Image (cartoon, rainbow over all chains, first blue to last red; front, side, top):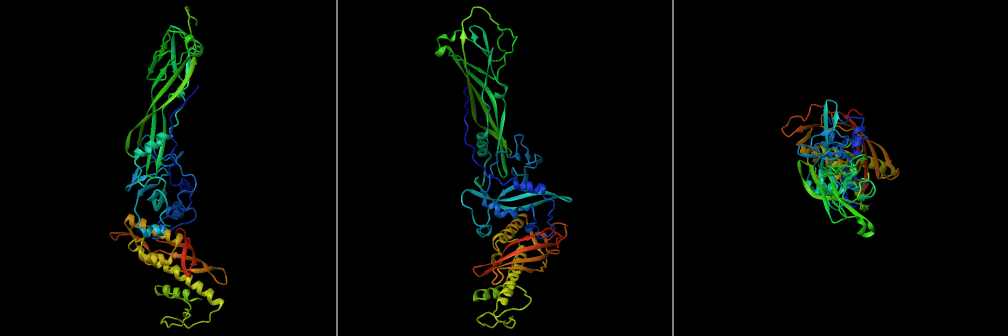
Length: 311
Length: 181
């Protein structure tokens, strides 16, 4: 059985290390910004993003891809932090990133950039990153400037949607032959796919402040029966079960061979199925569709002449 | 002490209140505020390093307090006294405060002490321990109201001061949470 599907190499996205979030959760000391030193407090395990400025501006330390992040905006349109709790998608004009902090693009002066260690090489952008953490009697937001390398300074949801699409890992189209074994002419063949081959799939791509989820939904199975006919079905078909009357046709996806496969190459028909997936995306308050995907599978079947019904 | 560091003492001394003995620049140029000259010995070098370290440390906070009145991350004085992580932290803080429409006002009280000089004979690096008292150095809205009703506090602070190319600057500091000293 051969299965192929088109897939792009996922682009590496750069995100602020989720590591910082772990620190927020674990930090035992509530760093209360009580006075004007609030912005420069860096106690051990500080949640102040400014304390990480040097680390942030390196931009390429460690694997910062978002392949398995759980935060950001999911397909349900809700924004979540990495622990899965729902958070507002926007606060004070900044957008939620997959790390649960909020990002707003900024344009610091050359003197500020120089003080922060200089303009890093390559593509990227400066952001004001604000992380909120609970403190006694409320919540505290700590801000800091960060350089986000790799991703363009402003990422449109549509661009992310294409990246999310490329991350979709669609299941193989596995054919369930029915009834099992050789088929007979003039008897119905039930065309069906393994249930796992026909299941919606989602993938998310994020940059700070924008997270988009692409969802692939199987919409059509196109069967090439090997005898020159093609059958289109809007579903995975129904799996034939033992005991079903052999003359009964599939309720939703079937075919009847009128010629045996004796004359075909090798005396068998090659049945090919192509599953067509519709891909839609949602995120950052927008939604749309991107080009669809396909998965394919094939099976070989022998069709024999028979004058009698054999069950 | 070479001429260069002597000049640094003068420059930093202008905006700072220094306690203890001053030193006369090696060229003997008269200066109104100078204390009687001392003989240049290794001891003097060490005490000069200590004094210069404390001076730039105080200079950094002075520049920070001044810049914080308008939350100006581009204040040139900050760059005279702070470098590397110390400068990043302050500039980032001022930028963030400006972004949030926040300014800081009030007196800041320092009490720094040099706890270590490295290397011992001709120090180019000093560790300073301080208890930064920002009880009254508070954050305000642009309208003049206090930003919040939280009280100021004292913060244990450890700073590293380094001499690079003859110029002393605070290269990093760790300011801990409230009531840590």
